[in-house]
Length: 250
Image (cartoon, rainbow, N blue to C red; front, side, top):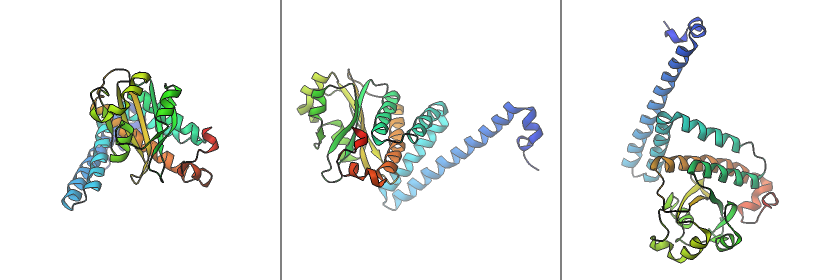
């Protein structure tokens, strides 16, 4: 005998209760998925596969976000769905940045692409910066800036106060001239974890983003990275992957 909520007549008569039943089923599915990912992480770690274990834990954390904050998750998925509708690569970078700034509550930021040959970062889209900043960070290949560290370590990086961060010392003058004191940088990666670039958001005062916001940004960057990877696989856009600007960016 099927569940009451599976009866079409019952569903038509009590739509709100039917939806509630569907929501409960979906929630149970998500909870089971989270458990599977966490168990997989434990197993992978016991086998010495730390990178895969961390990835499984990331999937578990994302599933928990779906459970705890469904409204936030829906906004996130809506934003990334829109990315796939953008035909031009240059417009895609700008849209990725727009979404990141919205999620991070920032009014300035940039998207940088990784040059696969030199391993340097080059700005592909920006908002809120002047020519001096753009020239200074035109090519980033050091480990002092937040974006440089994020790229080298392939992990999210936050500098709560650039004036107090020893590694950032060489860049303090341009930060002061550009009017930012804090920055977060998150790697843009494809479905295999391959680094494609970095998205950064900047803040006028010292700032430590909440852990939940950082988790959302990680998820957004991975979803955006998958869309970027699809574009970069297109033959006509391979010049971008080699560090040469494609006409669509101009």
